[in-house]
Image (cartoon, rainbow, N blue to C red):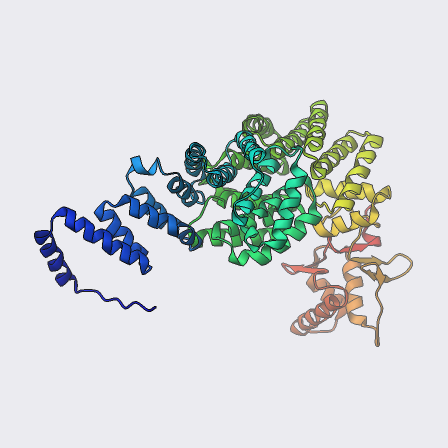
Length: 604
């Protein structure tokens, strides 16, 4: 049914209102406003209906209207509008109306989860007093989600896990699929962060997986399942889950889109997909800016910093550190902890050993207060690395032992991988070869089996040394070669069995191998490009003046002609062996050390 509407001229409307005030009593005016508000609400003119109910002081009608439309308003992203209408209701009424409080919590959560935590908690108490099971489940779920995004004290999860347990002991059913999804997602994140050893965690995981497959609405909250997969180190399931959620995320609310970008960025960093990680960070920040939802800005930026540090790019990390500093004063404890971990890592890369004790002191205080097993495990990795850098290997060993203890409690193979890798580094540096090789074997076998590629606090130069030792000792050779390529590692000095994309043999023979296969020529052999390659090698392979190469290859050519011939031949050489094989900078030509190995240039 199409309802026509029209609007009076503002001056005429003002005249009619003044006339009504003169003719009708306040009681009559209120009745008219109530009737008009009801008609407005019936025709879908929510904003006008709200104004009329509010002006008439008709709080019961306004409450009914808001509760009826709250879900659709949230789905439209009108959190702040709905919250403004709710908070316009007198405080004595609002604080006694459980569902109004619940929706107020929903409105606040993407913008201020610390506030929403308190609101959801108050709503739960009202629902509990009224024996409203659906309200209790939803508000308990809201509390858990708020604890996550407040990132302050995860020990608070314990109380709410216990309350959820009690609710399910009394009645294991759900009133709707939507409630089932919200509760399942929130329970998973509480268990992943606080109680990974929970006896029934397997049942919750299976239930969440089944919901993802049969209910599209699961995308908003059951994506929390990916946290659990990542912390446990189950990357196969994490990868599959993230792929599914990406397909569903187009319909998700902005806040959950940002959350998914953060999860993707963390996963990409852990799998050494650094460009992808930085792209997800940028995409998440763009969504946050578009919708003015900035709760996860710091977390996104921190994943970006981790990617830069893993690449050894301290300048890139510093740029993101600068962006974070304006927010850090209002950050939650988890973000402050993550910031301290990254700062310690940054100091390690810069060889700033003097600042490491302060980082460790702060971190120990933070992880004690935050109550999160994963953060505690990473603290011990950081402390082990710092202790080793400060020549306190007995303390380093104690921290590694603690990491192993936590990995067992979390059932986290990822944490175990990090511990083995750190143990291998420290033992080999300390000339404990047997212990070091044993730990390296376990780390790399686990990495190959579980698709692990990264570790907190690990430096590119250290990873390169560990990979060189592994190749020398025949440890997981295929996986190590993939690790080298994936992380773009370069050894301290040229090593023949390093998986360089290009290997050139000149001693007693001249052969070029590309990706493990000899270069084959079809048709006429390209003599001039090969002569250029030999000339660069003959002149040391590094910072060879272009003029010297041109003089050797085209001794009789004029300057412009020689330069033109050089550029054309260089292009042909790059096309022959690889576009990035020869670097040209400041009039100097060099073989790219990350791509090219030459037997004659190996320094004994």
